[in-house]
Length: 138
Image (cartoon, rainbow, N blue to C red; front, side, top):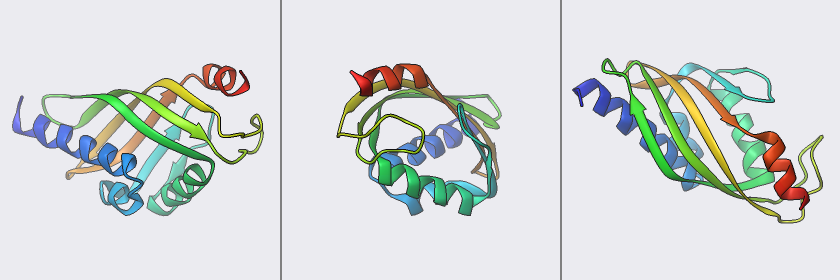
């Protein structure tokens, strides 16, 4: 791997380590000030504060871990992709979704990143919402 690839892979891995430990400040430290955050089935958020608000909501409704993480980066380190499995528990009902009763789920997921100045400036996350709903309704 190039030095740029190594730095990017390390940055994305640090982001997920912070995610797995519930370290919101650690996740935010990986982000640029004007980070763009897109999730499938959701709205675009721009900026660290919008990302912090998203994390507060997610951490209230869900308890999640990203396992089996694989991070790949371009030679120049400007872009990265991560593939992982989300192990979660649905704790508090999220608006417009099925009722939460502590259901657990296992969900394949992926994310794409843009990197500038060793900070994540775009996070785009994908998962199968229909699969998640089927698991929590079972």
